[in-house]
Length: 566
Image (tube, rainbow, N blue to C red; front, top):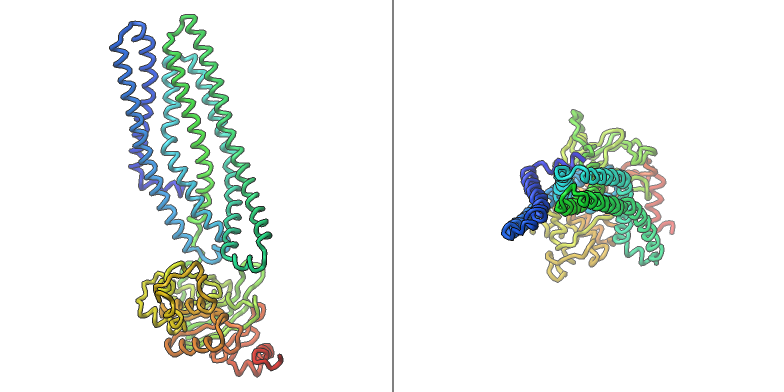
């Protein structure tokens, strides 16, 4: 909570100014019942019409002054809250972008989306309500109690007892409500996750006629979220009725005791009117405090979730290393596990010189993409050293690791073709065109209505699978990488287009070190070194000819793809 509250510090002067204005408005409101008492007890019995008009005019001026101060302070509070939340959301987004893949896996994408949206909104509401009601309401309660003690201590004691019971009630309700709001937000994360899964996989859901199952899954998560919100809401909803009961009971006691004292001649009737006015102010202010506490309950739970991200330590710092290697790319005894239980890669070693090609072949789940992720330091190896540019990858700053990569599943922006290839890097159009030609994408881009300026649908839905893959390849090539990773980048391409793509990369990108992950032996046969992976282990490595001679699995795959055994 302290980290989030620290975002108010740069706006301290404006907050202090708003507090001062709110304080002034509260003082003006507290003076009004005193003037009303004077009219009832002094001016009316004396028949002094001028004094009545004077006090009435002064009350109107104070009321307008209080309204003006409250409006001004509320506008200041809204602006401060908006700017603080904007900064907080920006820092949260920036920190989210710097999370390692392991941290992203731990928090989950749906939870991060919820923290960036719902949680920042709750924090915004907390800051706003605290500035608006967190100053005025306590001031009215405390000021009203002080003035009523000065007017009539006996009746003020009733007000004080009711106020203490009210605060105790609010505190107890809030203490039980905060944990329930945290549980409700966690349930909301699940709803967001299911929505994202259905939005991204809508074609699969429809193709497999799974709408009913997905609707049921969403309904179950939605019902869980509803119950969690309802539980939290029911707890917090007890605050207003209980405070109403206490305050109205106190109001009855004040009226009854005041009437008895007036009837006994122990106090003037104007004080009863003043007491009723103060009690109304205190009642309204106490209910306002209850609402502020509800906002604080939600905001505090959200602030803790936000701080989990902001305070998450960097788990991939640069580690200075004197170790060097002649290899441009390679691994030395590398092992890795996603969950820390069973190794997903075990004792992987290989070396690759600059400009050479590494091919990786293996069944699904054998660790091919994991190996590529370690080369790019998306994850840190548990054991061993990963070499990039002849240095330990953990000692190489991110901007020096000039990788170009085409993943199996990569998103396209709802933007122009140019922006999808440039990808916010401001790459000159001529370089984008050159990359598109190398990626065999320029032919279909030219046929689009506006060429490079044609707009793509979300996730490139208005393109075929092969066209999307070629655009992704153009994106990877446009940055002129020193290492190019193609992770099943030809799975949606026909053999002729895939062969043309490989030939164009070798022709237009001399000196680039290439890592090709593919199920096609034809895509790997020209590689300088091919790794055959099984269950996270390198069972064989060598050139295409060497593996055909010595590796039974590789030879069988090659024969199957050539149709020898079909």
